[in-house]
Image 1 (tube, rainbow, N blue to C red):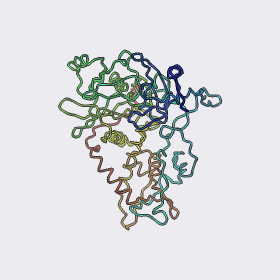
Image 2: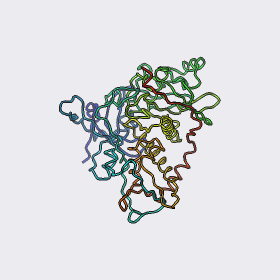
Image 3: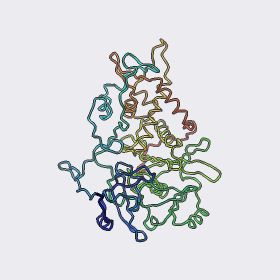
Image 4: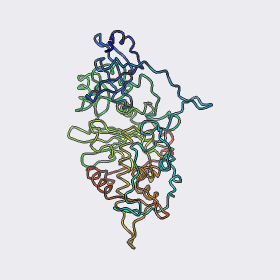
Amino acid sequence: GVKMVNMADVKTEITEGCHAPVLLPNGDGWHSAEILSIKEVNGKPLYYIHYEDYNKRLDEWVPDERMDLSKLEQPKKDVKTPIKKGEGTPVIPRAVNGGTSSRSSSPERDIYENGTMQSLGLSNSGAMKVNIGGGIGSFGGRKRKQEEDGDSQDVPSTPRQTGSMVAHHDDIITRMKNVNLIEFGQWQIKPWYFSPYPQELTCLPILYICEYCLKYLKSAKCLERHLAKCLYKHPPGNEIYRKDKISVFEIDGRKNKQYAQHLCLLAKLFLDHKTLYFDTDPFLFYCMCEQDTRGYHLVGFFSKEKESAEDFNVACILTLPPYQRKGYGKLLIEFSYELSKVEGKTGSPEKPLSDLGLLSYRSYWSQTILEILLNLKPNEAGERPCITINEISELTSIKKDDVISTLQHLNLINYYKGQYIITLSEEQIHTQERAMAKRPIRIDPKCLHWQSKDWSKRGKW
């Protein structure tokens, strides 16, 4: 009763858009995947596949040996995106950590989905008692199941069309990785996503990038010749921060256009939710480097609009893969808020955030707000300390909506005897202490030498 499959017949039926189970590269069994493209190498077909419900950075070329072609499904008919009456643009559903939300609404969920203070029933200036290390009344052990992707990101109904990188709609070209490997300083890094480098370079086995000026070259010999005459040993612009081996440079996207454009190209290899626009004039770029005897090595950066109508203090943010999971992401985020403090403003990153970006920000917000709460002292009468949402926001420069969504995500706000209170359990205090111990590097505000500029008074920047 075994069904024999003629492979020759199957191969002729395999087209872009087909689905089939594919053996995962780490040997973790089979996973359904969509075929995005097909090519022949030495007479053998290779299929570029996307694992369903997995991030696109895991997409890869696979031979048919890794596919179960007996379970091949033909492409589904296109489902048209609904279009609002009188509009030419498709409706983008609100994204929750990269997906769309199908969960039913609940009062707690509305609190941060609405993104307004009133929906919480809190006033900005209404003080909340902070209860540290113990429960009150019936709230002591009460926990609400917290959904992992519970933070909403308000995605605008149409992507904005300005900036160094903006949200974009998929098309088949940009859905596929086009660079196989880059050599960047001492590192060889496998890119995660498409970046519009010149086509004659993307077909090479390795794309060489100067780690100082970010120029791209076609061979190791070209890179060697370039390095002998490259004038850069650090990013252009002003060094506005230095402590120990960490430095941050501020680069003006108008004055250092080529460097800024090369930085965007490099970043696009590791950022998927944005697309490139080569007008870098309205942006400042903050490049964080590690210094050694050979020079300053780029570990990550963030860009920021010179003038943001919506008080965004970060447009794009990236830690390069070799430096990830070492605390640099949080350091970049912390630095962006230190700039906001100097400006005397609250700020928030531009939405949508990538999956990894959302995790980093949520973790930073949680640790920063908990640090403030744990440092509060009781008043003279020995009563529990009080704090307002406004005060947390002013102390941290974190926008009020982000403060609320964080308190909500941590499930800290409770209603007790007619007022809102924040309750911290012993367990949360220990978790916080462990998390802070893992952050050996912090931004030292005394080492930041920077004044904010009023770009609105500067004509065209």
